[in-house]
Image (cartoon, rainbow, N blue to C red; front, top):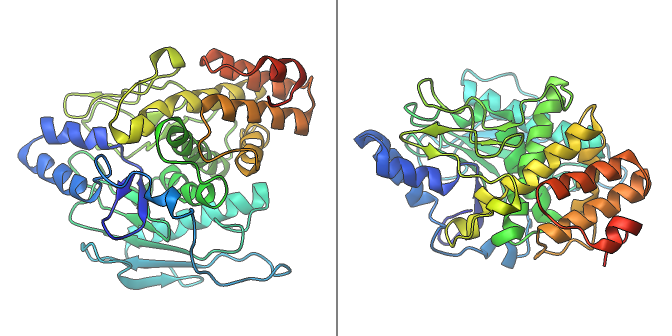
Length: 368
């Protein structure tokens, strides 16, 4: 998590350990870019629980009314390389494309994410009440990150030495907006395992937004988060891999991807709010395994189970991996049947990553 003093908490796509590695290993210019980003993204030390303590998503929006047809309401701003938000309005809903490519990429990405949640899960925007979607591009000087601040999306242009612009990556936009969905539903505490679940849920649905846009099955998808963000010459393919956590990059400047794929390699740390960007690899891998086993389009069944779980009132803000796993098994049983292949795939996936589901759940499909 990133934090701006005196503002709402913000959730960044780029893990702080990557920026720290660049600050330690990069060239002078790369170090300067990383340090600028870290000066904005300094939640490593302060205000780690602000977002959850403020009660999650509380954003003024235009009420559409219960009978109103959901409609996209997008506005894209240019921060003009400052840290002042939102900036100058460049493109509003329904207007023709702008001359600025990042403006159009942000506009399209917000729309693709809105359409995904509406078409697949009948969700009316991030808060399910028609929340208008706002984004600012060209934030900061060569800013290496993108974030959701509880009110809008914000995109940096990247330093173009390690990272490209952040508007061109659809799963990044889906990831960040899903933090708003989680904040308006379970509002998972951004610390330890509940924080890693918060990050993982954003990775899951960020990936599904991209898969739906490309009409890819689970077998066809790349399961990468941040694919295309790394410039040519960096030894890596993305920020994270759900299919193979720990393999997304291995580079002299970035270091090696530290994500574990199972509980045997769970990282005990006080950094990054207890390793939320690192240990999210475990539930990420569980989702991939379940989706791959079920087959077909991952958003249809595996995604539905995870979405049902996110909306489940029994999902507590402090939930750990086991609690979340138990609820996914319960929701799989409720939707597809106790003896269904879908529920078996969920149980097997969590077993493979070393997260234990209660004995009663495994037998009867109930939460203890």
